[in-house]
Image (cartoon, rainbow, N blue to C red; front, side, top):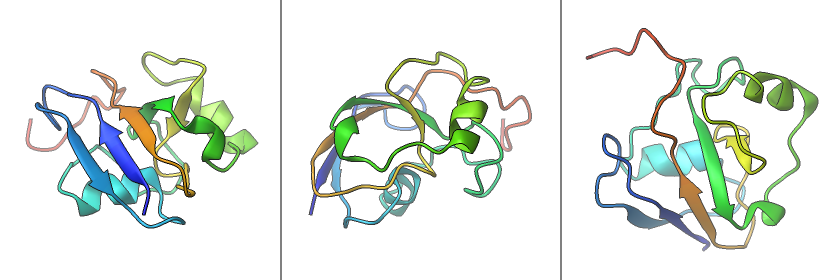
Length: 112
């Protein structure tokens, strides 16, 4: 199974983490299944940008971003060329390094 290295994030993963996930799983699903509670305000339906991540290594192994995802990413905070919506980025067989941006555009976070 591919290994996903998550870089430290002050809220979701302060020490960073390494997790495994089966190919065919979205990055968002893999994070949530491993208790890294990344935001996903639209319940992974590709309707917001709260699950935005930056893939620092292994991006070429992910499925290609579709036009709808690319259009949404234009609204994401801290957009970079390696940005993906984690709910749409499907893991293949290659290891990944993922960074969760410090901020999102979700102004109505629950429990905050």
